[in-house]
Image: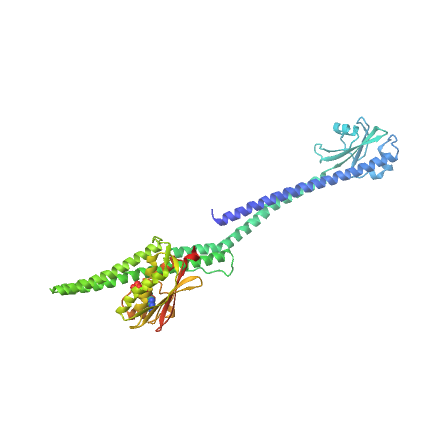
Length: 467
Ligand SMILES: Nc1ncnc2c1ncn2[C@@H]1O[C@H](COP(=O)(O)OP(=O)(O)OP(=O)(O)O)[C@@H](O)[C@H]1O
Ligand SMILES: [Mg+2]
């Protein structure tokens, strides 16, 4: 069932319940108070009648005309009187009593004999209902008369019937009007949801450039729209990254394949000396190594993405590790006449995986050496800064442009300057570094100026601080 129908039905049911309860309460209270008013006026009239009789000293009653002439206040048109003897026979009655007999009921007689007043309702065929009060008159301990005052409930019944009619007619009308209103309002409130659904369908169809037009309000719909748009933004970005990644990966693997193919074809064109074949095979081996490295690194990154890479969580003496890495990097630097200097070190222990940390710093030093100019210097330092171990690797090489800096940690990303500087490199090293730093709850950042050099800073929490 559509939400709009359900909302309207809920609303209608709630309103109908409220209307029914309200009308019932209204009707009951009105009926009660109208009847109370009749009883009260009967009581007052009976009191007047009793007082009149008392004033006459309870003399034997002669006839009604005399009574009425003496006490005109008793001849009120809307009420009638009957005066009964203690045995219940009629002694006197006012002229406005209707033609038929209205004997004293048995209950009234009993209650009067015990000295109490009684209210009764009576109904005669083809007559409006009557309300009666019977009051005993007791003189010196014995029952003298019973005075009965009555009135018709005609106007009360009429009023109640009219009220009932008004309620019965107006209730469905009010309900219908508000159901139509509710239907309309629900439709209005749900329209943006429909718009979102349509847009979501288009996007699900593959068009990730679609966005919802956000309403100005910060209400539920506004928030939903913004959340939805944010989600599509992220989806679009990651889809683009995946596409980019596959094309980069194929490209990186194709280059060595093309090289191998070209060299092999050339070698096969005519018979050659054994040494020539050896040269070709050696070159091919180099390309195979290169591809193996790419595939290994890709495999590592994708396993890291899926959380499948195991990480040790042991104390690592960082200063010893840095010294060791420094020695290795010095050998690397020698090939290009680059001096690697360990400028500062301090005792520091971090929790983590020694092999991964070694890979992290070697990658940074490899970059620093690779992107330095011949006979430059590379500087590595370990310090403690704000309660964290801080390793910086500084070179005075080609540098990285400001706009490239956020991207160099992406997979396969290489700056144009770096490509011009060296063919070696696939752009996976820093992606691995960033992952290793993050999984040690550390950070890696870069400061660089084109043509002046770069500094990579790795901060890692100390073992004592994280324990
Ligand atoms: N020290 C540096 N100086 C200048 N540019 C750098 C430096 N380190 C990294 N870069 C830039 O960042 C890019 C990414 O570095 P990364 O280490 O990920 O890849 P790579 O060194 O090119 O290849 P790989 O490390 O996978 O062999 C580099 O291609 C280069 O453009
Ligand atoms: Mg590198």
